[in-house]
Length: 112
Image (cartoon, rainbow, N blue to C red; front, side, top):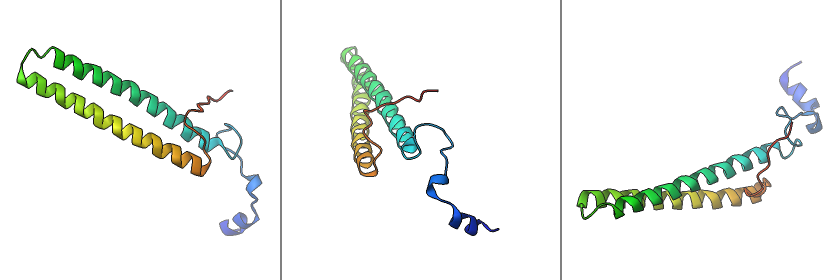
């Protein structure tokens, strides 16, 4: 029997979730939601650290133009990163709503 004949006989309800995480309709959505939530949290912590580091460099420059320029580059990179993360956050929220994945604030951990 060829693959197309098997596919024609297959019912959607016959397909099992290989991860055994959640029900069959939300497993992929939960995985994407959890990954996006984790990435946004980690990026937020890193961006905050970069802002603190750039501010510290600027405060300790003591008039050294090279040190001030380095601090400005760190701060501008942090702000650009913040803009990228916020844009990615909103894109993820919109896609999650449209595709039915849910909000990335609904972090769920799998239970055995």
